[in-house]
Length: 377
Ligand SMILES: CC(C)(COP(=O)(O)OP(=O)(O)OC[C@H]1O[C@@H](n2cnc3c(N)ncnc32)[C@H](O)[C@@H]1OP(=O)(O)O)[C@@H](O)C(=O)NCCC(=O)NCCS
Image (cartoon, rainbow, N blue to C red):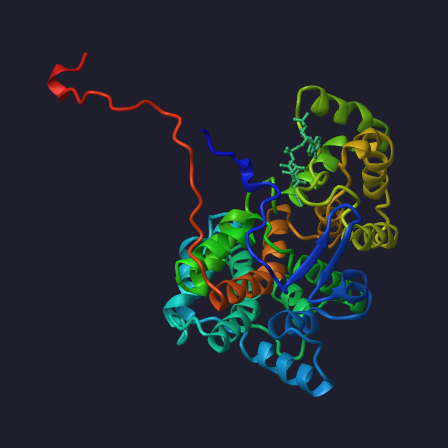
């Protein structure tokens, strides 16, 4: 009897988790039991990373110590800067993947998969990821990398390393919230990829490198970049309907809509929607938000009955664009936010491991006769 096939592993539970809870019907997301709305409004990325790694909210002293450790671990070895210089023509995600991979050569814990060592490595990768992205971005413009500034928080320091200028408080908070919203999301495709790596008892650097590779695809992390490209091509709100119809009628998809798990609105979208509107008004470019709103509230309304709503990426791209971040850096920002989530997924996998190895039902030919090459026509 043919086995039942779970294509794309849709609706398959792989294991239990204490990382995040997702209710796709209600549109609810908790990290370690805490609602994403509270974390987005009341927390910081540093605090959320602590929560993900240690499972509870820190005291003031614990957070201070943890933040100090993050700040102290931002510098990357000169050799890794040299590697980034060699690959400076590559896409920023390829550079990040290469940079994280290269960091393995310098990490004293690389082959230690204990929880303590995995947290130490997760802290270092979280802290160094922005330095890789910042250095690569500078190098590809023929500029010197900007050294991390320990006086700035995680988000502020990243923007400082990109632009050689510390952001204002509002911009800093915007990116901080964006990092919080992207930090963890259960067994999504990239976290699953990272877990497969961990399940062979391979190391965290390999798992994070894999996560970056999986995230890069437009059906996962690449959507924010595609959404902003779409908004730019639409140009004016009145062009939105025809533009989207052309895509949808030819069987295409509108990027930033739909989700494997959420069949209601992605709870992360609301925070970026409000901020996209406010930022557009602030910088005198409100029309991008108008275009996106038109797509959401006019064009895509009929899709709601099929469970297709905006996801986290729909408004993210417009925020990055308005912050003058080049579009090929959008996915890298998602990746930087997600490094703690990948780390946590690997910690859980190591903690109660079983090799992840599904089956494929063979659908090819059987027992063919091997014809020697000189007799083949
Ligand atoms: C994320 C995504 C891959 C999830 O897909 P999934 O759970 O595998 O669902 P499917 O690909 O089977 O799609 C189910 C149906 O919804 C449609 N659909 C899904 N997303 C759509 C979108 N963004 N625009 C238009 N139609 C969409 C599919 O065409 C399919 O229609 P069909 O049943 O007539 O063939 C998908 O929604 C998508 O491609 N979205 C756009 C990319 C994106 O924003 N990714 C970021 C995710 S956070």
